[in-house]
Length: 334
Ligand SMILES: NC(=O)c1ccc[n+]([C@@H]2O[C@H](COP(=O)([O-])OP(=O)(O)OC[C@H]3O[C@@H](n4cnc5c(N)ncnc54)[C@H](O)[C@@H]3O)[C@@H](O)[C@H]2O)c1
Image 1 (cartoon, protein in one colour):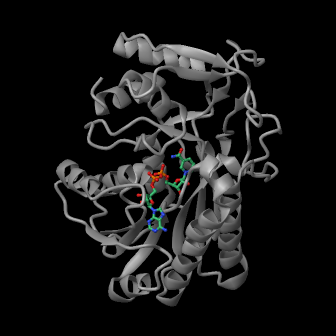
Image 2: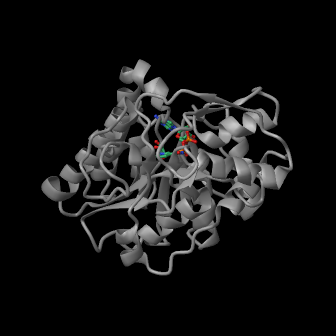
Image 3: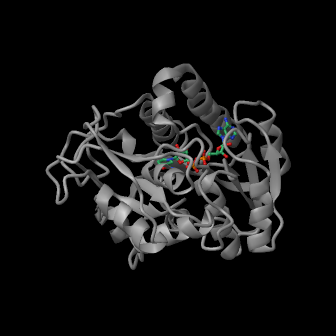
């Protein structure tokens, strides 16, 4: 468990999933929160939104995780646990800028782990990705599936996972690590005040919303001749607030276990056409599309095997696809 009298550090806490998780923690009376974020993909406005939703104060440091000065935070505050979201997440960019991704994601994480270890804070929940799995094995993907990241971004996640395994299993048994491998977090906070930064995001939702707000003319469907119910790819979408909840649930595993890996998805995939239909039904707006060729590397079906998380957490309730899309349209005012 996590001690409510001590602080929880949230790296990348002003980002998309991080900010939703901060709200979830505050709503459950984890009131001692420190956010460390370098604002490379977020802004201080999010801090205002968090305060507006929660009516609570949090401690914020604008710092890069690679900076040695983060040691001072661990020295000054009594910190029980870290939830580690901070990282760069663009698959395309990671192919072109691997050095940057290695430095930011891997070296930043190592600096964080060293600071934690030095000041006796050894509980961590780490944001990994479904991108670590070999996409060419048959879905659903189990946590024990073969690891073969399909991008350099995924490779940085594998490296960080390996370091954390080494810390907890070989270096010091006091470490307690939970790795959460997210599938496709979408949606927004029900207040409309927190949402994904669509400028840097690459997934389907920002691409559709850009068409709806007239930033882009058409939405591209990359291939409609896959062997699926409607020819388009199937993916496992999960509401970002449900993803946030899993971090709180994972507090129970910390300390009880040295090392645990869990998939975070719903286990029920939806197609590109399902998403478009949901948007059209809610907004009553037409979304012009263009059918492109299949993209190299895309697989027809990719979704999570969620049996392990169901066994550990029990009674998991997921928000529906309609709620996910409604919350997005509410947050961007369409
Ligand atoms: N959103 C997704 O679809 C998805 C899927 C799988 C895994 N993940 C992982 O989950 C985590 C959170 O994702 P997100 O969608 O909230 O991303 P995000 O970009 O919205 O949030 C990440 C935050 O980390 C900060 N940051 C980045 N590098 C930093 C550094 N070196 N030092 C300090 N702060 C830094 C950014 O400013 C940003 O606020 C990431 O690690 C991402 O790789 C995300």
